[in-house]
Length: 103
Image 1 (cartoon, rainbow, N blue to C red):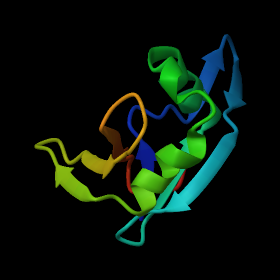
Image 2: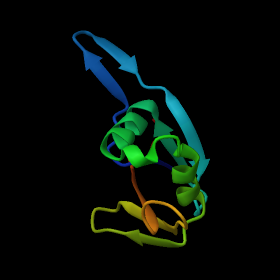
Image 3: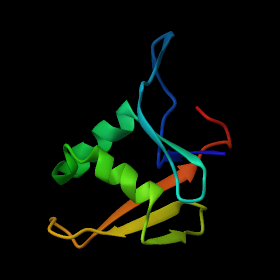
Image 4: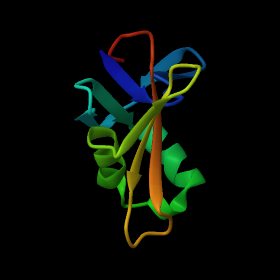
């Protein structure tokens, strides 16, 4: 199974053209599933959380080796990791499965 960071859009439609998004990085999650971080999602994350700029590897590390994991009612996975010496005590990464396929 492949999981995507939450709200992943697999392509952008511009008039009659489809522009496919580039995969920035992927990582194997704690449970063995592949999680893909696409360029568009990373820009969205950094726009809303500028303190994460330059910390892409830290975000993916939370997915691969979290301290705690919760699944909400929609099936989204909330991976938490305690972070020492950062802006916050915890980094939470939320991701969900998209159609069970690796887009």
